[in-house]
Amino acid sequence: MAASRRDHWPHDRMSCPPWARLLRAAFARLADPVAVPGLVSLASEAPLAGLLDDLEGLCGMTAMKVWRIPGAELGRSLAAEARPVIRPDGVPRLVIVDRIDLVGGRQRQRAAAAFLDHLARDGVSACVTLGLTRPAGALDPALDSRLTAGFMIHVPQRPPEQPAEPRSAWSLARIIRTAASRHGLSAAALAGSGRSRQIVEARNLAMYLARRLTRSSFDTIGAAFGRRDHTTAMRGVRAIEARMTTDAAFAADVERLLAARRRA
Image (tube, rainbow, N blue to C red; front, side):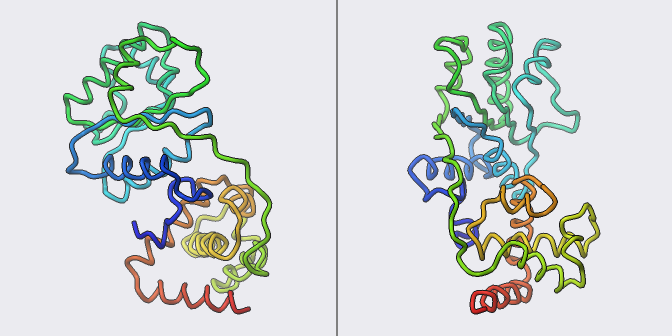
């Protein structure tokens, strides 16, 4: 992952504080197919779905098999059998549990602790999230000891988006029109539901340009494309970044486009 492409990853609006550097190192280790399996726990008052999306995307780049399951769903599976079959397509390299503190009561929490032990014995890494707003002592000691024995990172709540002046005169609407025109499309087509290759490529390019030419957040960019969410905008940007790393001619064309727009 080139620093010039994702220099603010994770939590792109933050300037890489110590917790973010720890998180980056932890995610890189989890995504390393030859690393020793480990457990990473992320504790936060805010939802961490975006960070888990980042981890899934990073592992996808290394062709890892990843299982992701909400804590409540894991609890129901644990109640049905001692060792849940999360998916029937073989043993994963990484299991992600979102809000493991929501698995249920003490019995299910002890079963979750045993499940983490099973993963470790099978050489499977795990990344779990848990909220900080739960009452003191809400976790069973068995589960709490597993989580604190691993690598635990406290992730602060992401600050609200602050309105900012654009880096240039280029508005989102103008960027969308430009990308659409280059592909022989209308701006409405990029905000619509079309999934043809031509539309997807134009949409991804517009999202990438918006990210590079304005201070717009992923939430704002996604909303400009037919009320899509921030993860869609992130994937669009990543698609362009990934192609630029393998297609030198395309990368040069995009950089020329950026340079021309900055001079405009």
